[in-house]
Amino acid sequence: MDILKASTDWAKAELFSTPFFILFGVLFVLASIGFWQMGKTEMAKAYIIPTLVAGVLLMIIGFGLFFTNKSRLANFPTAYENDASAFVESELSRAEATLKEYQTIVFTAIPLIIAACSLVILFIDKPIWRASMITTIAMLVVILLIDGTAYARIDAYSQQLLSVEKELKD
View 1 (spheres, one colour):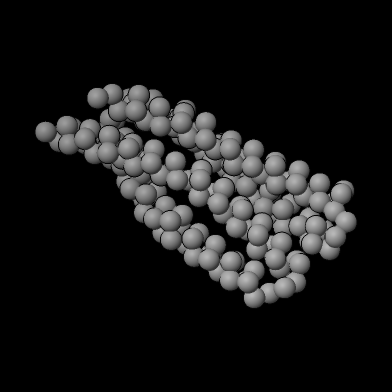
View 2: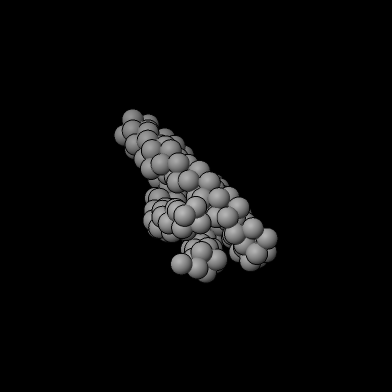
C-alpha cells in the first residue's frame, strides 16, 4: 500500500470539503444582509447579528482548515522521504487524536448544545434569544454534516495507517 498516496488523497479530500464551511458561512452572511435589508418584523430583525456571527465563524473555520490541510499536503512528500516510519507514526498519532476530538466535540458536545438551544427556544420568548438559538442550531447542524463525512474519511485513513504501521514493523 502506498501510504504517501493515501495521505495525499485524504488531504485532497479534506481540501475539497473544507470550502463547504466557507460556502455555508457566506450563505449565513447573505441571510444576515437579507434580514437587515428586508426584515420588517421584530423577529426578522433579531436574526441580523446571529446569522452574521455564525457566518463569520463558519468562514473562519473553513479558511483555517483549508490552509492547515494545504500546508500539510505540501509537507507530506518531504516528511515521507525523510523517514517513512516516523511519517506513519506521526500521522497515526494525529489521526487518533483527531478521532478522539471528533467523539468528544462533534458527536457529544454539539448534540448537547443543540438540545440546550432547543430548550431555550421552548422557554424563552424574546425574539433575539429565539433567533440566536435557531441560528446556533443551524450552524451546528452544518458543522455536524461536514464533520460527519470528515470523521468517516479520517477513520478510513487511520485504518490505512494502522495496516502500514503493521507492515513496517514486520
